[in-house]
Image 1 (cartoon, rainbow, N blue to C red):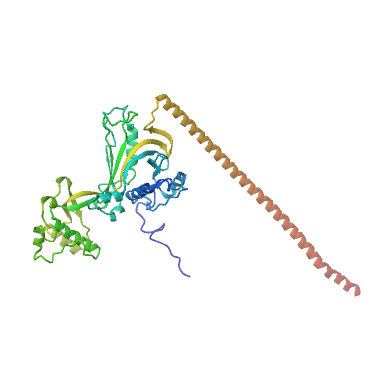
Image 2: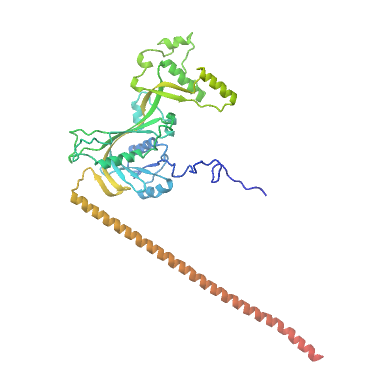
Length: 450
């Protein structure tokens, strides 16, 4: 008989499990996951639908990029599936009856929810058309972007009565946006994995920029960039050669390689501005501003060497021939990927797309109204808890009655089975007596004849 197969790589009991006992899919190491959806798939329009796709691409890799909505989908459908799928944030785009595009940012499973009105937006395709040298995505979307937040906490010397959002709600909104992406550890996160930047810039309210309500608007500008680094101190021609060498390693193509067939020496290409379309034409082409210079330490991967090879490597490092880490100055440049979004906060709710209103931009209440609202919500919470308690008791009663009916049915079936068994035994005894009676009569006849 063949032996049963035991999977040892991916299943429980595998030898290559983590040493800390935490499985890869457990909630201990699971990062935040977002769900970007649109309510009313056919009502929001083609531009908002494309904006939803761009936002999904911006939130990668921790989002459902290929999610398809239906017109019949409701908010309850997404909230029901958020738990089994491990979703932590919901970004919901919708369009009001007046034509405004709205965004709701909610935390699962208990809230709160931030309501925004989309003031302006530009799609990724519009941003690429406006650029002379646009950059594609490629491998930049395999890792989460670096989140940069600016001016989210207003200064203390502002007027408290004129403040757009209370201090505790400013801290709440900052925490919500920070939780959209996994945290980055400067000691352990490799620099090569940070390829994008998501900038959230809150507009500083001016003294004259007030609404009819007398409060400053809470406006956030969203920008999405790709990080591009280039070595410093090299001419454009040498950079083209380096880029072409990297391209040739990745794929067998000579595209981008400069044509040096008409030159006698490579120095002609480097020094002559008109040679093969590159050279030191100006200082701006070879050097960048000092503010954009960073010093990067390249950590090279090392092989596991034998004892003799290790001694030789240490000797060569001692002689200054080789170093494992090399510091190199590189110029950092940001290229915008899109989309561009300008958001204006209008409301904050306590639960997921519902519950008590914690703050509203256009409505202000007095202390008495706030206390009355608190009493109303406390009454609602008590009524809800009472309904849950009664429902739980009714479910328990139904379960007990169902169990008692099952036991009674089993007793009846057992009694009927015993009656059937007794009837079967009596009929079996009658049959045995009938089969024995003819033999006894024949024995009596034989005795009479004798």
